[in-house]
Length: 168
View 1 (tube, rainbow, N blue to C red):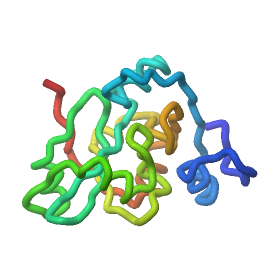
View 2: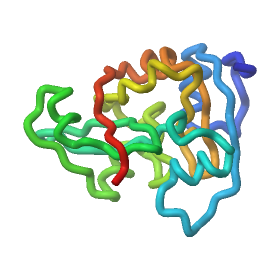
View 3: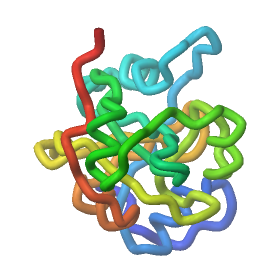
């Protein structure tokens, strides 16, 4: 990590400002946005020449009427049943896009689990612990942040569980 968390003046996103305040080292990775992309994490991985298993997408879900953020590698899809089980719930579904933006304060394609408008329970796929670095949205489309997996788990107060499955 080259960016030791230091106070910056302007230009940061809520996610990067939260990382700086927490003293967590990170790097940012801007990339050119493709407006035709239908999978933002896959788009970011391709644009930054990163393996899809290292780039995590942040999905806003509802488990038994409670919002839960689910982070899975771009190379997988979310297993809603496994997610519900991981938080002791019985049923999970994807949040409506408008609700996802309202709950997190971020726009689709730029939703980060860091610096959300309110505290939301977070579950990260257990594959994260095998990575040297994890990449995820820095709070806006076209900008990723990389950090150590343990720092991601700390700053988001997340738990890990096997919630990703191979894409069909």
